[in-house]
Amino acid sequence: MTTGRERIVVAMSGGVDSSVAAALLHEEGHEVVGVWMRLHQAADQRSEFRKSCCSLDAADDARRVASQLGVPFFVLDLEREFAAGVIDPFVAAYLSGATPSPCVDCNTYVKFGALLGRARLLYGAEAVATGHYARVDAVPDASRPAGRRWRLRAAADPAKDQSYFLYGLRQDQLARTRFPLGERSKPEVRAIARSLGLATAETPESQEICFVAGSDYRETLRERAGWRETAGPLLDVDGSVVGEHRGAAAYTVGQRTGLGVAVGERRYVAAIDATRNLVRLGRREDLQRRVFTVVGMHFIAGGAPAGSFRADLRVRHRAALVGATLRPLGDGEGRWAVETDAPVWAPAPGQAAVFYHGDEVLGGGRIARD
Image 1 (spheres, rainbow, N blue to C red):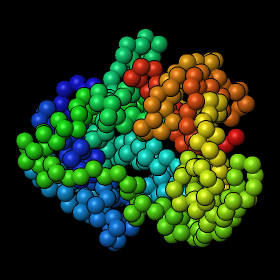
Image 2: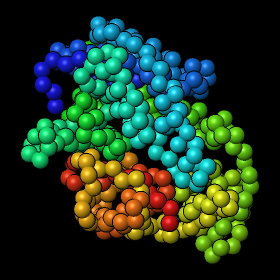
Image 3: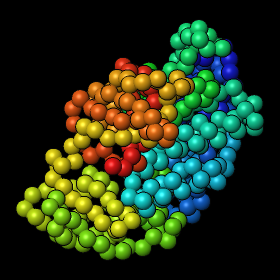
Image 4: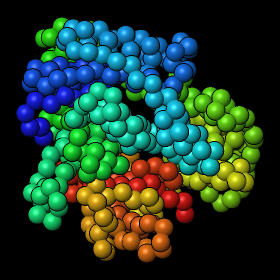
């Protein structure tokens, strides 16, 4: 929701989505300031990161689009904030046997944390915009000083919706956030980029974690924490040793490939005990869960509900929504018990659990260990 002409900092990654976001806001008459965030040093030096949204190639693409649009462009160094808010928790999660959610952390602590703060301080901006596929609006609420409540909503195109990664935003952040692509589909965005002749019109999707070379996060563990492979037992469903793993941090709950065991039927990683360096396996049905606990709950509207409530739950980005009941445990640690109407597969400790009412994101937290 915007009112009149604004100065808006657009986080330009060098991809087609953020490029079109900048172009749409520019066409609407807003004063657009393009900013590319330098997030980690590895992208400056290593060929594995050439096509990453954090690479110098991406910065050049973003600069070209800004030049095409005739808007100012700056490079903002947020390496320290990114390391503290994203990379360090990522490493710590794997070393503890959990599954990190780096995109959630990046949005919460970097894009709508550090960048939003710098947007006003450095550029006098009233808002920040990104190429996320999500929506923000406001509804009347007489109980609030401003007389309205800001909502985060799923994108109009469910195939591209990224609201799952944004559940950590607060009311004050949503008030200064713009998502120009929220009502559009990816084909529409590509078509706009082509019609404007933008340099990024044909840029392919970036699917990998931006600071991980290739798809092997273990290299990041080695570089950042000195992790080394330490063999340990692979335990089957009956507790028997059926093989040897190469280090608990090299596995995630739900993983099937790379286990190196053959027991006559498929096995998946069911649990990880990093302290004892154990990896437990299970059948697919063993990873179906209806009851688990969520910690670190954040509610976008502000305070937590006084008691139990119903919502739709998503435990990974592409997972289907499932009805659930949430109940506060009242243990002083902000823990909530979750019971789903139907089993969800492989809810992994550390993974984000996000709750919806219709297309509105109510909030979310991280799945706790048993």
